[in-house]
Length: 271
Image (tube, one colour):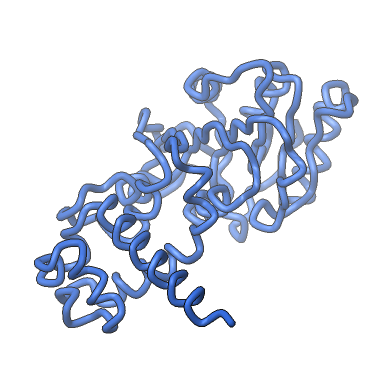
């Protein structure tokens, strides 16, 4: 494939190690009837393998130069209607047309990784799995336990929607150019109640934003009165804790109670 320089504005670091590429794809446990979505195919390190593994494939590439090169390089494979690479920003691409189980694979630019993950919660698709290469520091935040340094709003959000883990680290020498940060490959599997919960993802995000607005203070000194009463109903001593000392599931329990009471108030006000 022709030599294209990585673009800083897209945070591009191209995977060049084929052993790692194969390891990522094996980790994704792709089935023939999966609909594969690849975000940021780049120079095709994963693409050339993915195109052979499923009946359906969609690549989303934001870089016009790479988009052209990929379509030239894999024109035979992309001649089929059910396999294509589009020129688009993944954060603005609607995937709602996909009616099959989506297996998402991506080497995500570090500056948009969390945004992509949250977007996939909200997408109206049958999400089966996400296998992602992301910054190690970001992965530590996603999977951090309550009470640890890395635990925060993003940890709570992701752990309420996914079961996940870090699969393996990837050396800087596996990329061009070499990134200045550590990379890992992670896997995220939707929890059993994922498809029920995701309808309330935006409201849950707003709730967590208020809770974590002043992370060093105890919740009693941060929250509005409506939230204080809800926390008290679950467990009064929670108000004496800092936001990072409360388990992810407890936050969802509190949010559900708040949501239920709010909906009840709206019904009471109906004519």
